[in-house]
Image 1: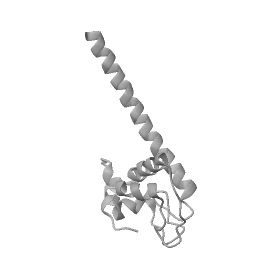
Image 2: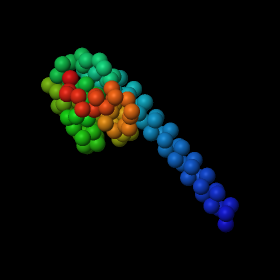
Image 3: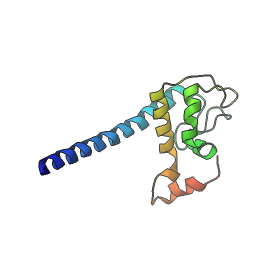
Image 4: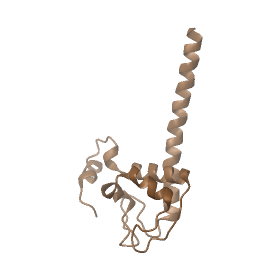
Length: 126
């Protein structure tokens, strides 16, 4: 019986490690997708300005929208986000990846002792 318990524990530990690695992959895939499909208009990084002044920087989207609420719009296909935004459709996996990346940009979701990160959480939008 104890061998079975140990085996189940090891299996669960391995599964949680895989899930954590998978989450990290989603963030990096989301960033890559944003750089490839969105960076011509939106600022993707944490400090740069958007090339198109009508396109909000990705780092500010969490202030304008609940990030998870963007999922249905991304799945349906965004037609208008800003005046010059092209219509595009993402696969369900691409939507998951981009949402993971947008969550990663939100300093309010991450516990931090870094005063700069916490200040960004409450700072006025750029």
